[in-house]
Length: 550
Ligand code: 1PR
Image (cartoon, rainbow, N blue to C red; front, side, top):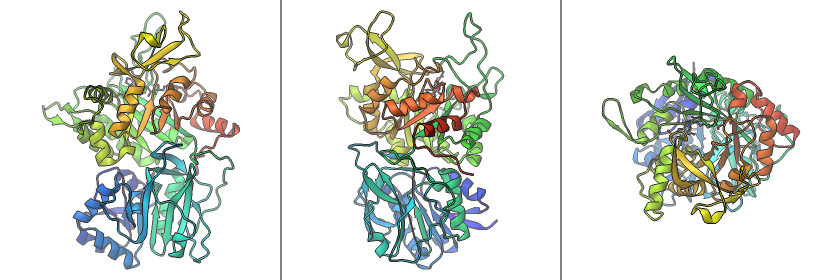
């Protein structure tokens, strides 16, 4: 196999990139010191997280000049995400840290007045006509394809500015803002999106770059539907994983979080076994899932951390699934079976190194939020959310919320934030609030959902996975009232979860709320509908979706 050199300078999920490069027929060799850069014929600079953090690490390790030299020498170079951003002079994210300075422009934060930030999801990379250059080549990019982006800072596109410097530019729109999605000039190619997480469209781009194919692929039909913000409607498949009574790790599914078979008289039977996690994740990827989420619903249970079975599941899944993977369950400071203290960040690191793109925190986030309010809304800097988002970026930290609906006679009956509901309880009460729970819904806490999501947003969480215990496994549709209430309280993206029973429920949540994504579990696992069925239904109803490419 021919070799590609990858620069290893920053923690994060590079496993997927390695898997993607292998998948298109290349082997990866790591560059771990500045002296080794000159060995590289083809160099890839991956990047995740914080601009300042990445660039300071590159600078203090002495990598900046060798990278500049590689680019000057005319050898192929590709930057991904922060790897693209590094080519510019600097970023508003950390004005004190300069970039490589190849392009004298800076990155700016997206405006969050009318849209969620970070910009997470599938968007375009459409080539702009460059009248200044005959070199409008774009390494397999296709104007009709969708690519996976996850970032808060971007290079605003100004017509002609980059082109005057000889760059070919592909752009995307996020709300009213047009930004740079990819650039190419001579031996340099860089993408703001993650090709290794962009399904077949992304693999094609990596392959085109590595084989020196410079042209676009124009053979994929372009969708005519548009969304206000530019993103497709994100459909996520979620796999709740736990050990069954035979000791096998299986995908299971609860009814209001009860995962044991119900014989009609009482629950408490065997753990429902709906299939094998790795196989099911691959199936959903092939059906067109935009992301796959694993929730380890019984966390560690006396297992030495290094042997965590979820690590192996992630490793194997990331070999065949080229869309973002999220893992949740048990991410908190803990004590290993041999008595060693292990921090939540160390656990997250193991997950990232095994192929996860995001980690999801449940119970620990509730405790951290309670402490945040006890301290008078001040940050401690020490919570798992703060530490992990500092090291890996906000976009890598999801908070999974497990709320329960509590009816009251009126807002005066509780100190918590209430809503008026169109679905009164049996007593006719039409006011309710949403109470946070921990430990898979087993323990109720004196905290409402609005308090929780606002606290974790302040701590640096990048996304909310919004479950609803009342709706879980009910097949009765999402709780639109809860979802819209949470959306109106925060700027970070929200994934609607719990209750999906058929494709029309996805249309309902996208039409009836401003949710950023919607997640299904039971209806997919029981084989009642596929992810493709959901997307077909959405297309029939004029929603923009990403269709899987072959
Ligand atoms: O608290 O950080 O260790 O994380 C534990 C994680 O496991 C949390 O994200 C929590 O939501 C999840 N969890 C814990 N117990 C259960 C359970 O079911 N007994 N599952 C559980 C949560 C909710 C969704 C589900 C949707 C959609 N599952 O993931 O997939 O409700 O289902 P549907 O479409 O079939 O209605 P920590």
